[in-house]
Structure formats: C-alpha cells, structure tokens
Length: 135
Image 1 (cartoon, one colour):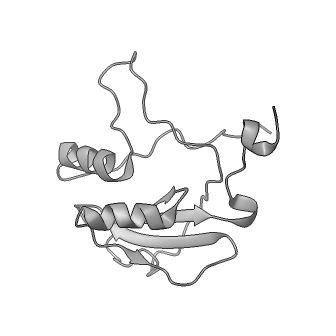
Image 2 (cartoon, rainbow, N blue to C red; image 1 turned 45 degrees about the vertical axis):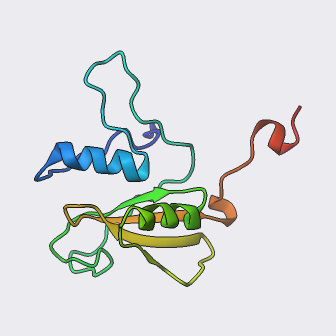
C-alpha cells in the first residue's frame, strides 16, 4: 500500500493572514510560504506526527468553536515557554509529565489553539552523526 510521507502543509482561514504569518515566524519559527518557487519554505525536523480526529464535542481544544488545533514538537519546552512569555504571550504548561513527554498550550492572535510538545521516550528526537557515536 502506498502511504503519505508526512504533512506537506496545513491550511486554514484567518482574519488577518499577513499578521498571523508574522506572529508564527517571530514566536514559533514557522516561516511564511515564500512568494516564489525558488525560495525554500519552512522545513520541519523529522519526528512523529500525530493524526487524530476528535469527537465534535471535545473540550480538548478548549474553545468549542475551534475545529482544529496545531501541535508543534519542540526540543526544549522550558526554553520555548520562556521565549513566548518574554514576548508577552500567555502559555499554560501542563504540570503532568506523560510517558510521551511534556506539553504546554497557548493561543495565536486569532484565538486558535496551539499545543507545544517536548517528546520523550520512543517519540524523543534521536541523536545523529557524531552525537550518536558515529565518526
């Protein structure tokens, strides 16, 4: 069976797309799509991606009016949370540590839910090259 290789894009409506593009670039490092085909787009690091439909009445996204939530993997949750808070962005860190890592929640300027995740265990980033004992 042929399978997809990963997420190639995430598209959604916004009230002010240009402001939102700038916010994601400035605070989360997600670069805007280039205006031409010769410039590179944002590249994500390899790792797990969870694809999970939720029941229509879930409160997991907190706002029942929102139909989606983006989850971004981060290498250092505490550093990302500090960076966001220094920029005046309210972030709620889940105090529980789960078998698959740690999580925090925030909202973008249009109120869209965003979750950041520092994976651990089988989902943790793997060392490559010299860090993995290779020379």
